Image (tube, rainbow, N blue to C red):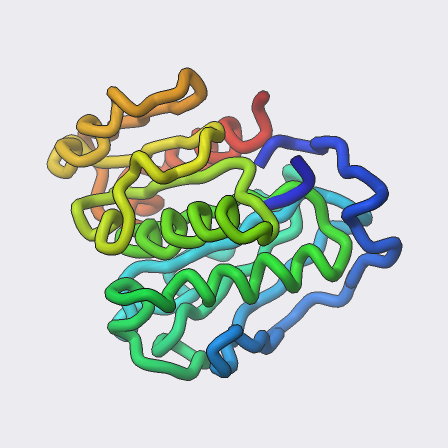
Length: 234
């Protein structure tokens, strides 16, 4: 495996990763395969070939990439990852119909544009973290990547997934990979229902004092350390 949405420092075959890495951070613009321009914040790691994390926020347009706390994004960089924090279609600085980000056949293209950019820039394994119905785009992209030879997801994080996660595809179509399910006791039902599908590499973290999606970081501050610990683990 050679890419993101986090096995720390996984090996990267020289045949599949470009020789140069983009080391300039800041606001970036990406083109989707269906012609939309998306905006995101790019925080590269200093080490060429470092693994990358793609962050997918809660439901657009009422949410955007500012959902993800700056302190958590910096914690990921400090742990050895490059971070791309994306506005999904119809949110923040990105074009498009926000409903199509999570309902219909094209939302996965947002993650694909980010994954291909990270790969072209020379970063390593791809990890994707989705919050609320950002998990919809995560699941859709992971399955498409497996089917179509796109940069594969090597670790996944589902922050308070729900029935919306499976709008287009069932969880049974998630390729086998380590995944973490992060949820409050109040919203445990969907995440707990996924246990029979566990290939043996999934982690389930329930927080009695939790909240929904990226609001988990304020409600249960230990979530940040737990996520980074999972992503940097085996």
